[in-house]
Length: 375
Image 1 (tube, rainbow, N blue to C red):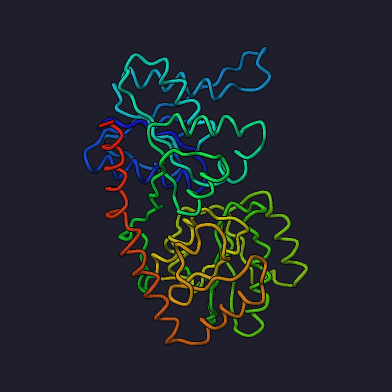
Image 2 (image 1 turned 60 degrees about the vertical axis):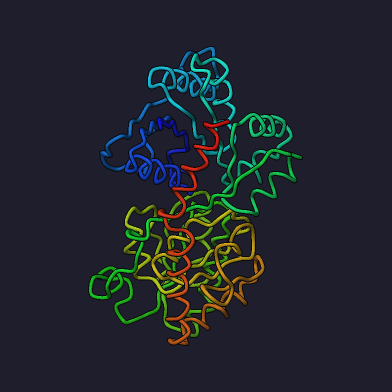
């Protein structure tokens, strides 16, 4: 198949999954064309059968705001016709599905199909704005196929937009050959961060308010009073300054490490003991999945798709949003019981291997494509 993929190329779960999917499809012999305004951040080296087409926006002074949606549709038309694409796979309903619909109406290849993957905030936040709601509903209904990354997101979409269209649930996935716990002897990073054998808690996100990163700091504040430990905060975003303020306020500056955006996540996760994800909303929780694949138990809030990923009292623990004390209690339970910790660690790894490995999920996308093309 010849597949065009459009995603946001910057840091974030949707861009990561779209890129990893494209790489796996290319390895399986499909021809993949990424269409976006920048090279996806996980497309770090040459892969045979993968091509990148940059969307350029006009700087004409009459247009006060860049017309990205139209520029994207124009590039989709160009690539679809020149490369004879079979389908466009867009990640996020707006503006990508809207641009794809416009491209399909104009393109000369009338067999071109569109499938849209819903990832979260395009449905639960941005798309619910009154000015966008009709556009999101239309774009979803006019797609030839629609997938959602969790049952939660599927139900939310059907309810919020009164959509009767069939939506397939295809979860996020991870390469378990890459995301796996490194040998203790290989963890120089851990020895550097915790030279005295401290336990390590970790959180990764884009530091938006919805991620409640300050809750992770408050959880850690309780934990470190009982167990010598360090907290690693990976990522960057609008709430970082507030997180740094809370860290200073709680006198934790020596124990909380702000690592910023990092590419070497496997080494960081392999060095960690517990992954904290106290989000207010999480349609799936790719960061938690990557941690689980490295054998790191997860302590999370009970929102969105997280309960579909984290099995309570098996591969981690789940608590209500904002219940910092309970999350801290769960974390301490894991850190002070070696036998229980080892069981949870193995359960986390096994759950990833048995349900979310690329070898299981990528074929689901291939079958989804075939079903659309046969319509």
